[in-house]
Length: 131
Image (cartoon, rainbow, N blue to C red):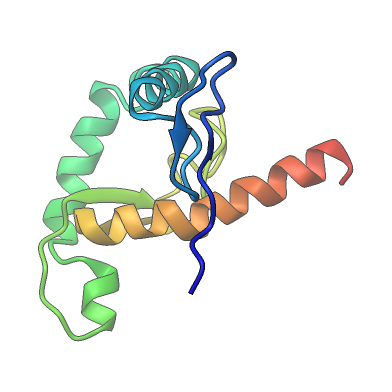
């Protein structure tokens, strides 16, 4: 079976060739992540300050097991208080709505963020741009 050809790094002016499926070479991937983090803001700026930390501790005590794992018959402790419907920031009415929270283990939270939440944000961007 033929392999797909390598392509150029997406960083302007970088001549490095990379494997298909990647966007940046190793050198520029770290810069891309750093820039995304800067644009995203700190946890506190996103509403996850001391008030959220207190709330999360109480929520995790009341919901000690990962909801997604429980549905699949596994027993895994909750590590993250997740917003079931992705929120747009600390001013979003769903941010503090307890019915929009669930306890997830780190693995399930990461899978959700990479799949469901990513699709929701893509759809919101299309709706905002009229596409």
